[in-house]
Image (cartoon, rainbow, N blue to C red; front, side):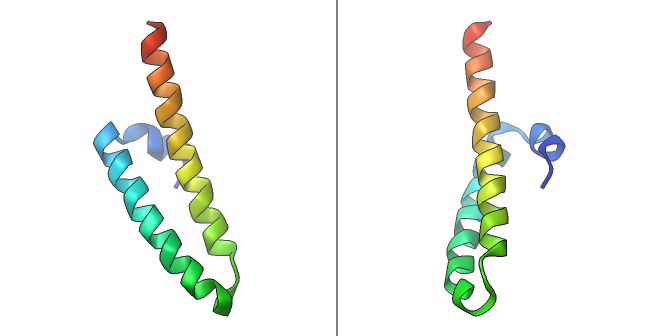
Length: 64
């Protein structure tokens, strides 16, 4: 998921996406012993991007 796609989502959609990704991360960690952790790393990266965007949007609203 690219940052431009994250910007297009509204707050509720981003929250829902984070929940989905966290579940996917748990499933990925279970499968990590078999395949490696490349997928886990990518999932964590997307979660971090969404949380960063949420925080920057929240801070931006406070400054206005």
